[in-house]
Length: 415
Image (tube, rainbow, N blue to C red; front, side):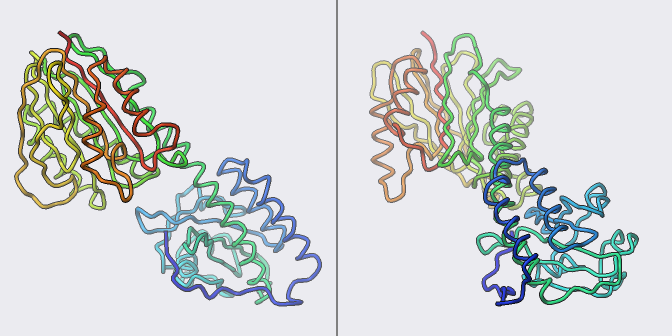
């Protein structure tokens, strides 16, 4: 999104809008306040364009939304120039007409539409004579551009610009809410597709897991995975991509798949994480993630693990107090520091349970992390993993929504 430190928007002046304009604006306001909240994003955008066309009596209307990953405006909905969407038009911020509107953060009137003033050839091919655009701004962030056009000789006025900005301000709120709803649904679907619906059944092991989305259901980049390797060893991984929303969840899926592929090439957890770090630094340069990767040998008597900034697991053994495993902690994935990664090997007794978790379980703003880890060790149960996970979640989360995502994975070596 494009942040606007200071907005110099055109505001309505007394008498600037006639009675028809005011009535149309009331209709849009009522619609954005109520009915639009229940529409899917595509339907929401189409409805907004229909209402905008009615209010300003124009021939074309389009909404371009800002794509943070590319830094471009993407044609997302259009009326009268539907080709913009079908052809996937993208406009860099600052370039062309829509890019200028986004960059300047204010309405722009364009009385001459040709290759010298617009970047998108569809606008000239359609015979558009004049354009008016306004930024879509929500919470002081430009999320896109709304522009309208005419095929006749009409020229837009300052009053038209005032009205379009009012429409854009109302529309931006509805669009931001719609994007948020759509992203939550998309992320939740992605998260469910990447997290096992039930823990894998591996002979000799008992596995349980919990995943709790953070506050307001804004799930993100936490994941866990357990799978057999061709050698007969069992791979165990847990990770946390920084951030919340669709992008961290999507990156999480790519990291999970890449780690699985690298795990087939090497039995050394440090080597696997090194390759994962190189992949992220090259293809996902804005990504930061903590990842722990462990390999449980075929006899289940030894665990070799490497951690990229991720919390160490807790080991609960039958005849000893539970404790965090003393692991050499290396930089997170995506740090690009290039330091050699290290492995740690520990013995695992029959009947022991390993608890892997993300920091959302134990970290609290202003809280004492060491005290939280001590408490986790106290609570870590020698009961079956499912009961142990339930007891831990009950203690650390209870009835409240966690402030951050929580992933918890328990693996017990059966007697």
